[in-house]
Image (cartoon, rainbow, N blue to C red; front, side, top):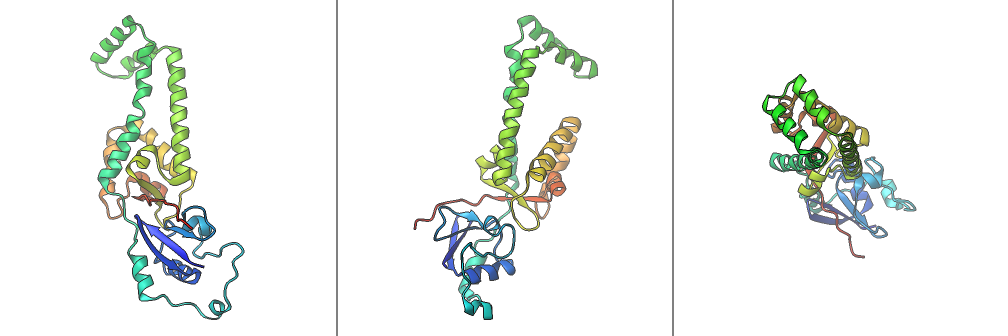
Length: 253
């Protein structure tokens, strides 16, 4: 069996199944590396093929007797090729752009009330805002928003959250990360992160914290991103890292 690997738009191989398993055991390749072999219709992460394990045994594959007797040694060329496709952490500027895109997507929700308010209500809201935002004026401002506007804002928010949750669960990417070609993976083994960690713990918890303690929590969160693994506070909480997205391309048979 001939297996090809790819990482950061660089392809390596072909390797035998025994070589792939040896490299997995030695952590010379990651579970996030893309793999393809005959019989597959598209490139897939190794972790998906191995179900998160550090060994791969394709369905219906019969391991040769020779490989059962002795392990196969990797050639220097194989090791060099594997090392040439090491994963890279996403730079802070790409992460900041991705975050900005995700935040901009919420702006339409805040513009919805203006379509439901008459001129008198708009003028009153402007006057309240000029007085400064405090508990009293904030309550008065919210009371000016019509019920229909709240309903539309809620629907918009739910749709956006569902889309983001789906993308994060599928590929570790929000809409912003999809645009900037970066993704979230497990900090320990580089595999895909479950919905609870990647969306509820990593995203929703910090959305609430940002609403309550902005801008303090926002500044503190990103300050941690300048560390060795570029893990922000929400990365550390969810035990994740952000890497440059691996480009998936189909291998022609």
